Image (cartoon, rainbow, N blue to C red):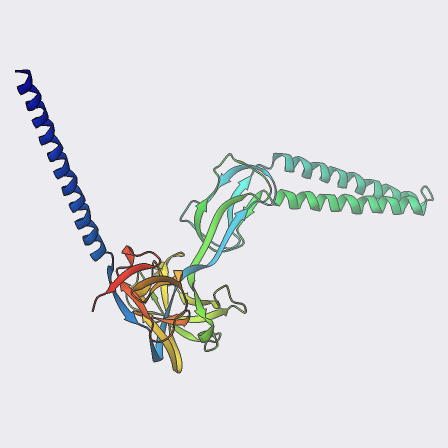
Length: 351
């Protein structure tokens, strides 16, 4: 009986060992298959385009942002408590219009005191002038009395000017865009009360490449395409920066009349320039860029490997972008599948 039990136990152990070996072999086989599949699929499928040289002429576009004709913060010249505010956000304000008033109690006291000093000095001068005729005062005393009147009059004028500062007047015309304080606020000198924006005309600010800036001049007419308005508007170049802002691009401002205030500051728009003559240049599809065009990064395919490359761009032609550095004619750039790539990823270019 005991012998049979031992044999049974050994048989069970043998079966278990055999089952374990089978599992191990299966696991190893599966890992090998997975490795083979992974090796076969290590290349990321992408589509690519070739960098080409083209003769470009005609129209080119540059994106930008609309700026207001004027933007100013209106503040009080003196400190005090704001006791009245005559405008609200959205109100139209004319230059010279009063927008608020400060408490003038202390200022009025100063005006009264200055007036009393002036009156007293004037009466003293009158007595000295009569006394001088009879020899009652000297010429020096009379001159001193006249000087006192002059000083008192200057103090009076200063007090009156300060009194006028309690009335806060706007120096510009426009719409109240923002209100910074409420009635009852104690203001310090120069503290902003409201912001006024004039959008009777707006300025589209764009950055133009160095290769094209020489073709532009102040006063040139330019077509402007706002993102939120159908069709194009007529604009005129009113500013060309004398110095580049970076990446050899020059800020240019194009003024557009804003009929019915349809355009707002901060909106996006596109300036449509006309290139003079033709120019042979390298171009790549807009889809080749990683992120936005302004990031200037593309994946270049060499020996079935994608390399993240920094390039220099020029004019934006819509679906094409000029390349001024970092690529050469014949290079391949990825135009689809960039989301699956990192630098030096193995790729398979789909035909």
